[in-house]
Image (cartoon, rainbow, N blue to C red):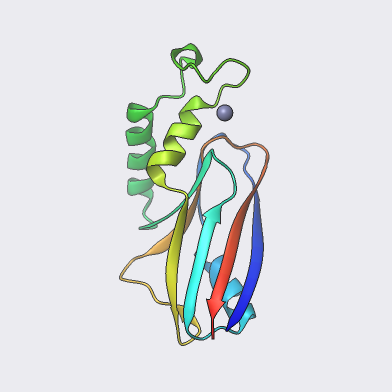
Length: 138
Ligand code: ZN
């Protein structure tokens, strides 16, 4: 069995951002030489997510509105976590958007359903964050 490990790094200029990382993950799969297997992609921080959905700007706006309804950023003092930090909303947003995805690798490429794309969801940005890409297979 082959295995490979990569880290992707992100430094957003805004607190919240959704970034399509599909091509970066695909490049990792190609470099690994794995033709049939699995790729795990997970955020290495508890205020960021990796998830799969459509790359459609209206939907991304809907995510922002929905997440702000569930866990609004402000007022900061509504959260007990916000004593020496102000990112309680980001922890909650990360929980509902998920930590990781696993995608099948078939014939050396990501084996997606229609319109599936991999996203990095940043909820407490403006600093360097990492995503782990772990590939196993043959
Ligand atoms: Zn925190």
